[in-house]
Image 1 (cartoon, one colour):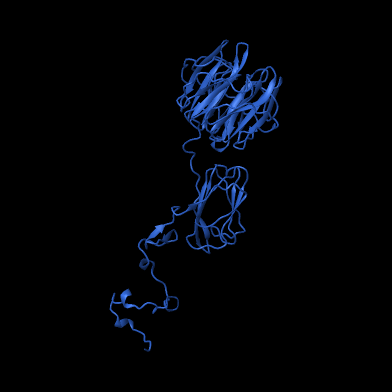
Image 2 (cartoon, rainbow, N blue to C red):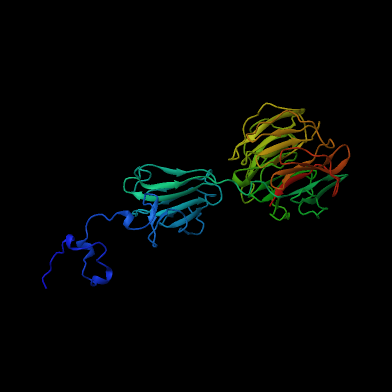
Length: 456
């Protein structure tokens, strides 16, 4: 039979159905031309931010169909469309090569696995395609802690477009839920006993000491949920350290690194409280060197002193990722402070605010602020979330020095033990708004020259 064309005026609407068309009689690739209206393809709204799903509906591009891969720790990654990648840049930057070809709607997600992009960034190589309308000669970098980047390929003109590149909050919080007091001195005896602090601020009875008994060490957090005690004196200065697990278990001695000394301060710094720093102190003479603590609890060699060398000072964190050393003794009591950046760099002296004092203690509260308190003479000074020290607040609790402090309950703090002329063991809780409470009856061996840190 000769092929003939059927004129459209010979057809009535909806009269040609699938059942009336023989299989293979329509050459789709050669015989159908033109553009099919998007409304005829599916329900919903067609746009550059939607795609046509298998159920013939237009859906917004989301991460729901992303296939998440294992954590990437290397310096390079070749990305594949449709995948999500947790990127851990704790040890190095990561250069990510995007696909050399892409289809409209292709998507990928990159997320900061350990909140370290602020230290070691990721770099996207668009591999010949455009990124936000720019060709691949442009540098594409993301360098914010906690950031996630969700990109979608739109077309040849704009190429890959980030539809999300926000940093997430530090939920459930930067604080630690529990704490530990450890080491110290009571009449004629150095000790290594410890006392745990619950997530409600309750002190436990003595736990048998582990490691070298000593006085005047210091302690801080590291790794987000662990702690470290370090340095001190046994009659001789030492640099020995003892790690604290996220269950509050103190480990045996680790051989000292850095200048042996005592009467120093320590605090954490870095995103998620991942690193720590010991600083200042005395070797018999006042010193100002610092030693950084890695996210795995490894103490580094000395960093040259910045700021006034002194002993009998203390330190705490502020601003979620920074720290501050404050007060101490140079021969006389002093009140200057030194800020610590989120990279562990100590700044020059900031002029003293509040009463100059020696052997106070300090801790964080409210997740981003700090408090200095007690010491000789006893005084309390709050630290704002930008590291500004406030003038004296009326002192609450038994005046004493040579005590220690740490966080508990994620956003609260506790001061404990010390010396009033006699060794004592009372504690004072700090609320999430920085209010110091009256004395709580002592639990555990009364002692001074003690250290503390939080964990978990």
